[in-house]
Length: 383
Image 1 (cartoon, helix red, strand yellow):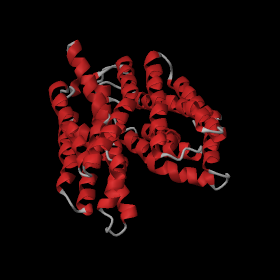
Image 2: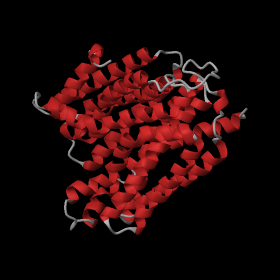
Image 3: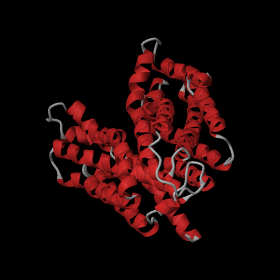
Image 4: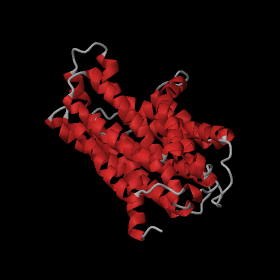
C-alpha cells in the first residue's frame, strides 16, 4: 500500500502528465509571429505554420483510441514512460531544425506521444484511486490547470523574445515528469482489476463495451463542442466586444480563466454530487455566460460573464473524466479512456465549423455564441 507521501506524489505526477497537451498547445502560441517571419518564404505558410501548434491536438483526437488499446495490452506504466521520453525529446528537437517540414514531422510524433500520455494518465487515475480520490485529484487538476497554462504562455512569450526556437525548451518539462512517473507510478496489478462498480472481478475479461463507448463518446463530443467555443475562440469573443489590443485581450483572457480554478474547487468541494447535477450546473453557467457576452455592451460587463463560462468549464471537464472512468473495468479502461480523449479533442476541431454553421443564421459572431448559450439553457437539447 502506498504511503500518503507516495500517493500525493503519484497524484501530482498524473496531474502534470494530464497537462502536457496544455503545454504543447500554449507554449508556442506567443512564438507564432516569429514563426511566420522565420518561414516567410515557405509556400502555403498561412496553412502550415499554424499547424506547428495544432497538429499535436489533431493527433490526440486521431490516435488516443489506439494508444489506449496498446496501454491495455502492453502496460500503462510502460507506455506512459516511453511517451514522456518521446514528448520531451521530440518536443525539443525542433531547436535543431531549419526545415518547416521537419518541424511538422516531429510535431506529429509529439501529438502521438500526447495521446498516449493523456490516455495513460487518465487510466492510471482510475487504477490507483477510488471514486472519491479521483474527484479530488481531478478537481486539483482543473484548479491548477489554468495557472499552469498561464505560466506556460508567459514563459513561451519570454523565450520567444529571445529566439523563435527557444519556446521548444519548455518540452524539457516532459523529462521531469518522466522522472516523477518512474519513481511514483508502478504498473497496476491486473489481478486486482475491478469492474465499473468498483467490485473485484476475477472472471475472464468481458467483450469490449462498444455500447458504453458510443454513449460516452457521443456525450463527450457534444459537450466538448460547447467547451471549445470559449477555449478556442476566447480572444475573438473579447475582440468582438470592442477590445482591439492583443495585449489587453491576453490580460482579459487570463483574468477570465481564473474562473476555471473556482470550477475545479466546486467540483472537489461537492464530491457526492451526481454527474447530472454537475453537468446541469455547468450548462447553466455556460448558458448564462454565452447569452450574456452576446448582449454585453463592452468588455467591462462581459468579463465577469465570460469568467462564469470558465467556471462551467472547470466543472465540466473533470465531471466528464470521472464519469467516463466509472464506465470501464480495468481491462478496458485504457482503450475506453483513449476513445474518450479522442472524442473530447475532436471537439477542438469540430467546434469552430459548427459555430460557423450557426453563424450563417445570425447577424454576427457573438450572436452565434448566444445561440449556443440558449441551447445550453435548454438542457434537453444538449444532454
